[in-house]
Length: 136
Image (cartoon, rainbow, N blue to C red; front, top):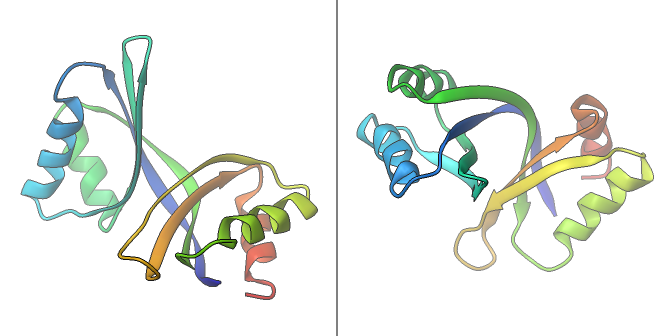
């Protein structure tokens, strides 16, 4: 079920919530050939929060900072998993059994039954990596 798990970085962009802000971020990346591999975006209280992974992390952060976006980087786990029922249950049970708290999770899904990407931020990404690599 879990094909691959590794430590990685996510890009976090905070911006004033206004029409088109996600489009501006996505366009800046696309114009430079940088691909978003997983995305979570929401708005509350006039603030837009975008968490995502990309194929060229450092270039993406530099580019968005030059475009005057507020950019942060967070350590995350990046998992490639099968896109089928029960995968998320398997992952969350393993982490819960090891008493590792999941702080954030998001992902992307491909065509049915292909490999999808899950991005997790936990209370201990290093311990979570070990737990999830056991019995892959």
